[in-house]
Length: 93
Image 1: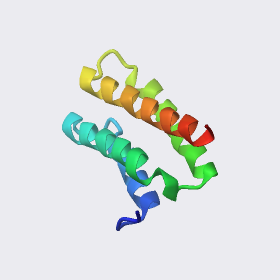
Image 2 (image 1 turned 45 degrees about the vertical axis):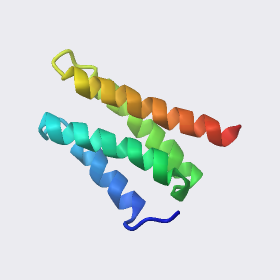
Image 3 (image 1 turned 60 degrees about the vertical axis):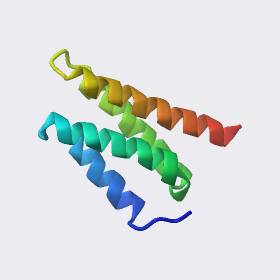
Image 4 (image 1 turned 180 degrees about the vertical axis):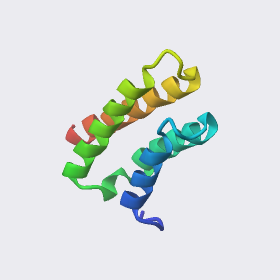
């Protein structure tokens, strides 16, 4: 099912909104929206984009590992990475 809006623009915007220069609330919602993007629109990305998305998600884990980061943000980052890799594994089965 194709929904409106370019998935690449959405993903790029959301990856910007999870950066530390935004408030925790904005970052948390951006992480949740990235998860929904993976669940609902993953098939709109090509294999190279899947790989790049996965790499960016892993990079976020390193950024969020800071002890000063909010627990909710750490949890949401882990959930995003799990969603990405579960989806990628499901595709290859």
